Amino acid sequence: MRRALLAITGLAAGTTAMVVLKGSPGTSPVAQDLPAAPPPVVPAPAGPAPGGGEVSAPPSPARTSASPRPGRTATRAPASRPSVTSRAPSAPRTTTKPPPAPTTRTVTGPVVENEYGNVQVQITLSGTRIVDVVALELPEETAQSDQRSEQVDGRYSGGSGLVVQRQSADVDTVSGATATSTSYKRSLQAAIDRAN
Image (cartoon, rainbow, N blue to C red; front, top):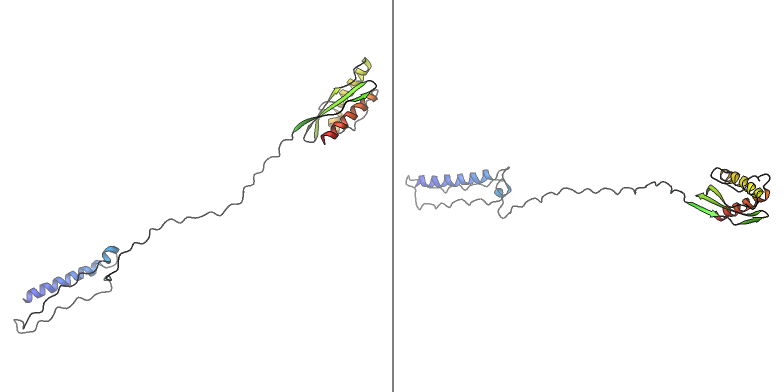
């Protein structure tokens, strides 16, 4: 009977030791949270032991601080999510656009009469700059008026004429063609005034 009692006590102590060792650090949380098996109950023998001594109850296994607490359930730590970093708003983009190309437009002056015929001038502007001047009408009644008109037109008109060079109607009068020059400048000035 003594051997049986020692075997049961040894079995209980071995089971307790396994539970305690399995609950040591480094094991999975699920194994740590399992309750320990209660020690087997050994009935006390009735009466004196065969050797004449008293039989003492087997020592109860002591709990260690590493043993799990009953009633506690295993919980998983929430999975960590990668943190989302937000960018600070950047300053608004400033795009430098080239200035728009100047618009090209034409402005026509009025018809101005003189003793030799009619004079009318048209100017072409790019933005506010005169880039070309064309005489739409010049006196051509006689050979003399035709010759004077060619002198005035050659001097004032075109992209390289005096009007484009000076950017105004303030140009010198063509000698020998005063009436045609004056009519030309009046029509030109009116066209410039209309353009502004």
